[in-house]
Image (cartoon, rainbow over all chains, first blue to last red; front, side):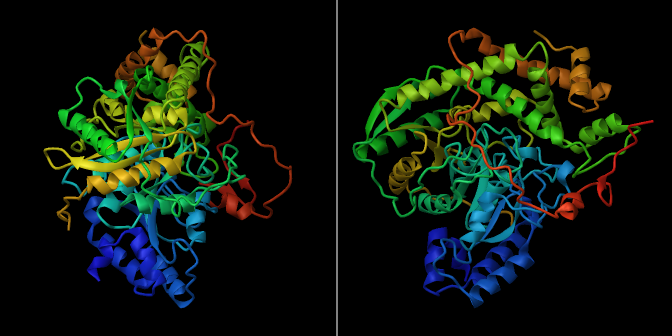
Length: 484
Length: 95
């Protein structure tokens, strides 16, 4: 049944419903491939035995009305899963076993999904290459010693290598879209407030969103329709009527106004990315979209703003890791000494660096100059989008300024690492939805992605545009199973 | 502006992260290059801009103050590095 691995999520659901395939067959196939793929280091915690039991249970009493009937799924290790270890890629949570379930994963189980295991990620989702994980870096199936991107690097790698039929990640500044772009898959960052943050290990609370990572746009619409829900356990969850994004998916792009922001033509952008962008523009135009040049004048300030806002929120959120109530503890001579040693030994370098930035920008005497300033610029960035959306329905840009890079290539220069997120960060600051779809390869054969940015809560529209572009792009992955 | 070693030590104290001299030196370099990058924001006039704290316009919702979970002491203590029946145990704080 090797072709099980070739089916999309939607194919698998159909075949289960037609009783062509059992949950057990599918689950077993993905477990076997995961077992053979340890070289990629995608899993932090495997839950295979229990997955097989759940698959058996499903097959003995199948409920075909579910959206994900008996479908196995591995998820980013940032989602709390009841009784299954949740580490956030950190030593400080190495042995943390949640006693509760995140709302997003709970939605998946309620629709018949089965947990395969927890996937590697940058520590506390802070990173763009999955090199900051306490559990080691992840390799991309695209090529040996190549980063899968980050922070949802384990998710991207596992999905692209076919170790799970679909997955979920989280995106604070690009952590779904950048790894999706690097590994040739689809990744959606929903509008802030669309998916509950309850039970997701917090990084930067005003920016974090969970979202689907899938093989194609149809799968993305299906999984998104499962995970998006109003939740009174998250005070920033928005209560609005959610459409069935999957049922309503169509290729409508005709007459849609698509904006091309000139500020995304950054200095030093490789010609391949420029060409890819043009290709996307041409395809949209040929399909009947109207292309308009637009301006987002404050784009250049998004990254510096992000590197104030996100660390500030992180330094507050991560204050809870003090070695008292849960997590790692290093013994000290007194309480303060215990805190300081615990946090020094429990956090990795990137996390400590960001906590320090955050602590500094929030500290007395610097708050106005940095944090308040950044919040004001954040308003300007959001205003830019509000203005542009008076004229267009969506915005098209490249997802990243380059293709995947080698492990170790950027670890010594934090700023060059941060520049990876230049096209994705503004969207988080404005709280908008955006999807990255695979759109081509560079000369080295590494995948490149295009990003479609929507108005708030207009996911249906960007999914439809993505679906339409996908038909014409006809992206084919060039992987050769080098790791097996 | 530049961040000197003394400031790094002060921040590490505030953040409750102990930092040895070697690490402090490295952090000094990293933080300076990051802040050099951040300083770009000073080019912008923001005098007419209201700070944006959340993209969600709505006020935080109120909910009834009612007990929803009970008898979960064991669950709460389960992940503690050190506990004694009903309490989290920490190094002695009162002489």
